[in-house]
Structures are given as C-alpha cells and as structure tokens.
Amino acid sequence: MKITVDRNLCDGNGVCMGIAPDVFDIDDDLTLHIADEIPDDPEVHAQVRQSVTSCPVLALTLVE
Ligand code: SF4
Image (cartoon, rainbow, N blue to C red; front, top):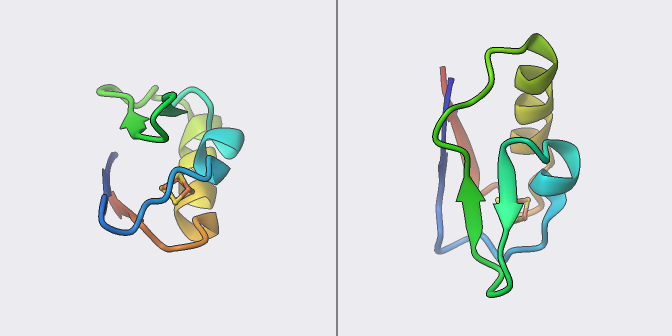
C-alpha cells in the first residue's frame, strides 16, 4: 500500500490525520507528512482507505 498526495490541492486541514494518525501527520506549517512505511495492519489499511475518500479536496491517491 502506497499513498501519494497532490500538494497543490492539500490545504493541511488534517482530516486524514484524524482518521489515520499512524500514517498522516500535519506539521506546524500545515504540511502533510505520510509515513514511509504503512503498518501491515488491516485496521490501518481501512483507515487509510477512509482517509482517501474523506479528504475534502481529494488530494490523496492510493496505490495498492
Ligand atoms: S485530508 Fe486531504 S487536504 Fe486534508 S490534510 Fe489530508 S490530504 Fe491534505
């Protein structure tokens, strides 16, 4: 599982971090950081999928 973000779209609102805090982090500059390694955990994978569909600006893309 790999995730990409379109940084032209992401506004740092943190919705994804709220859903999958082990994977997404927003720093003080509202820059999104994505974990290098996505935990091999079905629950985390489900959180990631929900984050992708919940991003208000559809900035996230999932590469399975
Ligand atoms: S939910 Fe979308 S816009 Fe918000 S921080 Fe995450 S990737 Fe960026």
